[in-house]
Image 1 (cartoon, rainbow, N blue to C red):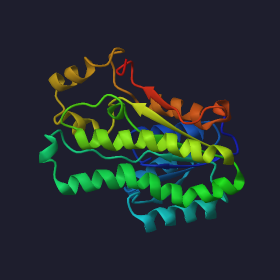
Image 2 (cartoon, one colour; image 1 turned 30 degrees about the vertical axis):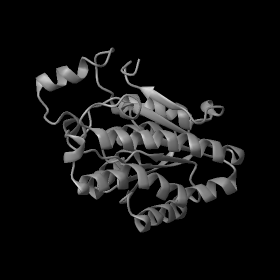
Image 3 (cartoon, rainbow, N blue to C red; image 1 turned 90 degrees about the vertical axis):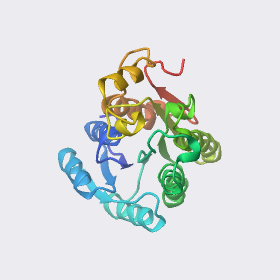
Image 4 (cartoon, one colour; image 1 turned 120 degrees about the vertical axis):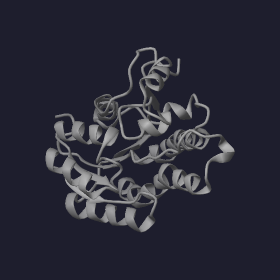
Length: 246
């Protein structure tokens, strides 16, 4: 029960890595708000783990503010915030990605971190405690071609994590990131362009441990970084990538 008595908000928790993180937190004693743009998915995960479902569009300021208010009403305060919601564009030449796709990536992968900080950081600073975890990507460290604007958004998230960590350290708030490699999530097909045995083999050939990241892998890593065991860890972008970035 490493998170016993803690409260957590996890965005994009209706599926994929977010659901793995929400499940790990609940298993270790946390009360979890399962936030997702997909209401049915959020409710299903929340019911399974005894959490609270919340519909949110993380790229919309009013929606994020409503999520923060709901969390305060249900929990009283929030100890852990996980910015997990993310999107990508289909593999394409950088100049051929549509403006709509570009704007969507910046909204969900970049602007959302600012919006959740605006909504949750003041209370964490007042409490002089808290842990924020941003789910970035190995794409922000070792970019793949034809995913340029997704790569850039995750590189931004890594830099934002370090900047947030430095600014919030005097208030006792820790900020870290996880860099997963492609995983068995709804985004996998988008990264590859097509989900075929040949394309999977090509992706796996770049991962020394020979497998994709799983929601369980992410849940275990997030559990450490958001628990008191990592009380001296801040500003870290931990690679959970099977050795891809070596």
